[in-house]
Length: 231
Ligand code: HEM
Ligand code: HEM
Image (tube, rainbow, N blue to C red; front, side):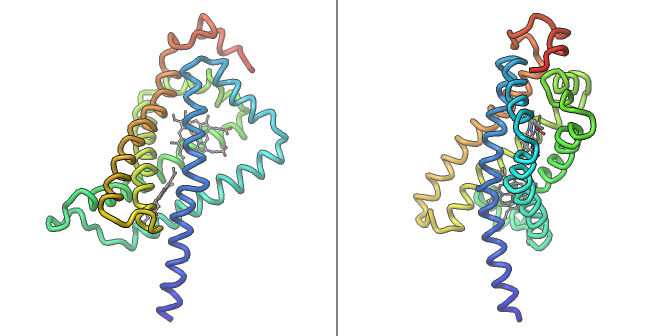
């Protein structure tokens, strides 16, 4: 009985680990890269939104369900289950060294991400299905970030946690799948994870700057002009 259970856990744990990279990790990287088009201007960002809006709705829905929603919901729910079962080891002083700290923060960032993504999807994708896609075009996003005091801090922290979770998750993934075995290899991937964390965080934050400071957006001269653009 216990063997069956541990086998199941082993299998689902591996699936959980893999879904963090493929497809969820890849999705997030392309998502942040496309969002950063906001820095180039409203027409660039609206072009991205228009590309997806222009796809046949049934193909878009199938892609969203299979490549994003199902893997993400599985990863998130099983991730909460893993956190619920785990024994924190960082706060016991004898284990308070750097790799345990990275591992503990990776789990904490997973919990924060769970709340951030629930909120994020409600105010973007779900909102779009209810109120139309103007809410996720440049003007809608600008209104949200410029018109609320909490939009910027919530997203700045959400992006930071997502970036940390993915980048140090890659370090953990390499150990779990036997890709890095020696200490030397693990230190190299740790350095790579740190560099990637800086780059991905800045990429995500660049979109927030693009939405908040319209002077960076040269495509139209005034805010009222973008509210009318519907590329
Ligand atoms: C700079 C910060 C971010 C901005 C401006 C942003 C913007 C958006 C927008 C506009 C949508 C709606 C897309 C649509 O329905 O066509 C969306 C959906 C979504 N975002 Fe983000 N996002 C950000 C960060 C993140 C992060 C860090 C993640 C983590 C993986 C994420 C995951 C998602 C998911 C899963 C969806 C729903 C996808 C779908 O069903 O199409 N977002 N985001
Ligand atoms: C939505 C809420 C999320 C929760 C609750 C969550 C939870 C977790 C947990 C607890 C782990 C550690 C597993 C372990 O220690 O064995 C983990 C690993 C990981 N997660 Fe997430 N996660 C979430 C979202 C994401 C997202 C959006 C991404 C991608 C951008 C992601 C990518 C990863 C990666 C790459 C790993 C490392 C896999 C490994 O340990 O082998 N997670 N997640």
